Image (cartoon, rainbow, N blue to C red):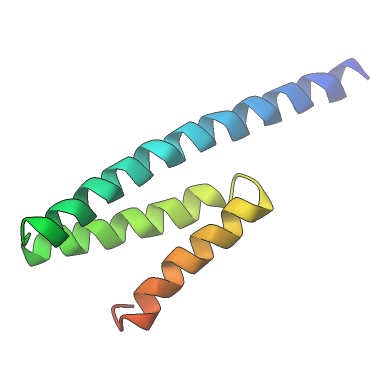
Length: 84
């Protein structure tokens, strides 16, 4: 029983860390989108932004179902733009 409880605690901690990393990556993505939109950033920034989208999708798979679904919607934006 004690091992199961420890595994659960580690699992919760891992999901929490993934959530924080996900928020940091979303902040980086927001910065790229902002500069691309308002400062007329170059194509390199656009490519960098989509790399963040793929990272978000990968990290979201370590979290909850609603987060996974939101990351899929974000990735679908890339597909709808014809960039994937």
